[in-house]
Amino acid sequence: MKDKIIRWGLPVLFVLIAMPAVIHDTFFLRVVTEAVMWIGLAIAFDVLAGYTGYLNFGHGAFFGLGAYTTALLMMKAGWPFALALPMGGVMAAVAALIAGFPTLRLKGAYFAIATWALSRAVQQLALIMDITGGPDGMRLPPFLNPQFFYYLMLAIVAATFALLWYLLEHSPFGLKLKAIREDEQGAMALGLNPTKLKMQAFILSAVPTGILGGVYAYWITFIDPASTLGDLISDQALVMVVFGGMGTLIGPVIGAILIFAFKTLFWAYLSDFQLLYLIILGAVIALSVVFMPNGLWGTLGGFKKKKRDHENKLETSLEARLQKNEGE
Amino acid sequence: MPEPILKVDSVTKCFGGLTAVNNVSFQVQPGEIVGLLGPNGAGKTTLFNVISGYYAPTSGSITFKGQDISGKQPYTLATHGIGRTFQVVKPFAGLSVLENVVIASFLRYPKRADAERHAWQILESTGLADRANLSAASLTLAGRKRLEIGKALALEPSFLLLDEVVAGLNPTEADRTVELILQLKQQGMTILIVEHIMRVIMNISDRLVVLNFGEKIAEGAAAEVAKNPLVIEAYLGEAAA
Image 1: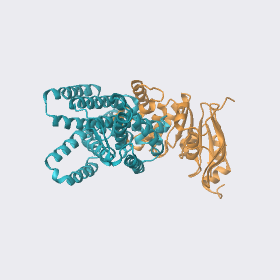
Image 2: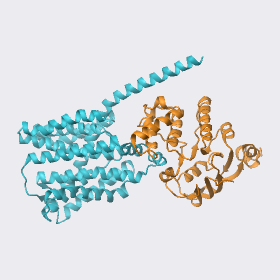
Image 3: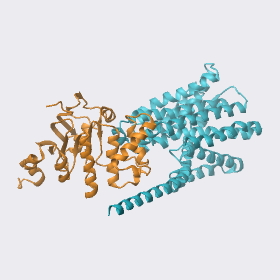
Image 4: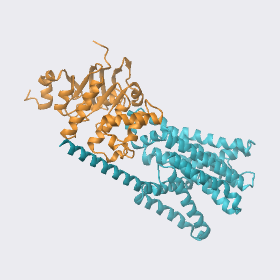
């Protein structure tokens, strides 16, 4: 697994780093920057959704909180971007801590509803407060360097991916989260503290999301409650993760790329039929839940695993038969 | 008499108006296998859940190795050395058999490589090694019950609570599980076991504790308890006694 990640990850990273030197199209760079951002949002969403089994419909609130925190610190407190950005992550972590205590006791749909409601409350706050500019949003000083934002986004998402890969696929933490997902009561008997693990997962999911929100604010230079705190961020991350494959790191990356590419092409060529986009998005999610519950990556990987299981079973039964024959 | 490893001291557990366990006391000595008997609904599983920390006792106390553990969380008790299985087995169905045991091994072996090595040993000793890479969901009931024991053993407990690990198995599988339990006893494990199959529990237990309607009605060696009129009444009805 480790070798595979390095064998595939390094060339991909190299191509992504070299790309702006070869392709000078600003629109294209902008699209790829946003795609990279969505990869980050999707893998962060999957920490809780796929690995821990909690669908967080308030994921977008972490993004918005990060965006607003960075914007407010820069505009109202005069902080430099380099200091204001990490505070976006800190703010998201604090929000996760506060929201996690009551909501992580809930399960399934109840958790989804509670986090959705909390994120609505955060959006309402941003709408009525003076300091956030209410529905008019906030403007940030323009810093027009697309390459800077591309590399910053890439660095943050690559670092997030590496950290999540280490924690979820390599260290015991990931398996412990999966144990919580599969059976919380059973996990407790094995010495796992579900409250603590779920809180850690929640914060791990929130921090990169908040930081990405901060980058987004400075990059787009304009944020308002609808664009950074709306439903669409959580919904889209959910679709990417479910479509790509929950409970894996590669799945959400694939899901994010495909869904984002589809969205971009749709807006570029079929922008007269905007309504259709959401309908298609809804259909994709419904169909993939029914026909591909493990997502694209899980389904492809599942075939391989099934074959292996089958072979293992054959071997086992052969061995059993041989032993029996010997016994006779 | 040596210091008991487990002391259940007048434990009562109520759910609203229902008293599931009523003022039960008994002790378990190190290295002993104690059988917990009783008809359906007698409160055996509730008592298990109280001892293993899933329920806090309404009153009374539980002492483990001289320390009051009443009301402590299950994951804390696991570190103290209490391992348990569930009557309704709880495999991590989406994970492999090996991963199931590795998760339990993390308690004593925090490093992944060490935990995996330990898990393989457990799988060997419980006869699951050939199915290590299969998904836990693909195991038969016998396999799942074995996995329950394996996960509990991976915690390297000094005290094991087994909740109906034999019930539902065919005679061959049952014999293999009994053999495993006797092996554990030889290694010095202390075990409290709930089991409905009399043949099993009479044979492997050093002592029996019998519950009925939440109360302890008898305690002692198997032969004695089987003759106790209260026990016969609980199982067969008043006329038989």
